[in-house]
Image 1 (cartoon, rainbow, N blue to C red):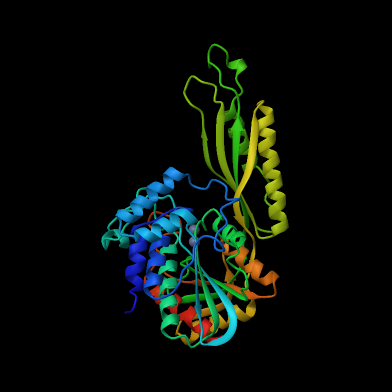
Image 2: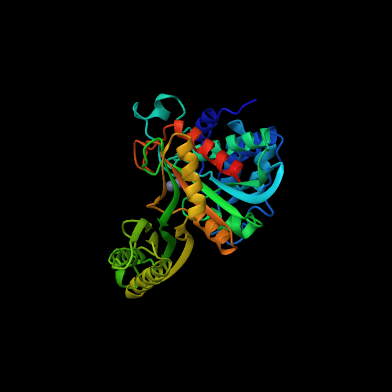
Length: 416
Ligand SMILES: [Zn+2]
Ligand SMILES: [Zn+2]
């Protein structure tokens, strides 16, 4: 049997799940790998749930598990993933001794309603999202399919040196999954690390062997607490958390850019209040900072936190600022990036060794960890003619890119 990578991508695409809720996706991955005679692992040694901020509650995950079984996932694996968390590791061993590779495939989708336009291929071809408020709008559905296809090829022909560890990672969006897998020990003993990303506004047939200059980023959640009171009878007795959060929002957006490096700052959500005639007693916002320099990134995060605290104080409110996730800068190693470029060229693709990433990916934490221990790695970008930007309701990838990614990673591993 040969896996149909395009069909797998379409199946995953139709069932998108967001951060740490990838129950069906991970259970399906486990089922396919088990069908190949491999031994996927979840739980201990794969994911550490302690320390994950805003992990989904039991009722949510129970609902996800039910939905997963109802949509065809294997009930035993659903139960395991529901219990252990939606991260999975599987090792495929080659016929000769050699390095331990870790290849990262992220599995999560985004809380977006997918386009229904006829020009949007998943809508036209009948594999548009069937789950409410979820969409694979970053290409991770394709990553999952590539990972499964590669596992099959390496199992079918183990003529390679060393071991390839497949990391099926939850919660890349928001930068929470990689750190939880690192804390779980999923990367132990790894010498070489590669993550692949489809799209990234590159044309189909274009490959960048190694990303450089990914943003370090910190995601923050700020909870403001005030005091409710009657908006007419006693407004002076209230403490307006909405006003504090609004002032905090403007204070965050008024932070200076840096002249020494590229920086970004954003407030992405803001919710507050209970009713039109009540002084709002609560507000919550999420914000993020990014910089191409990790030290500047830390400084920006400290200033944003101070700005939020100052805004709270000015309205007599309290605020708790909690980092919920993040990632670091990324410097792919030239040897690995150039090897990928060479393999891409051999496949008839247009390739360069290095190129800017332009975003963030918490694979950077895996890469940095491997490099810290003397290993090497790269973040390879595979063009897919995405017709709309990442995280847009009309995002899609040209499915021919799946074969490009699959062939590229196979050649890299077999070349040793
Ligand atoms: Zn994304
Ligand atoms: Zn992505």
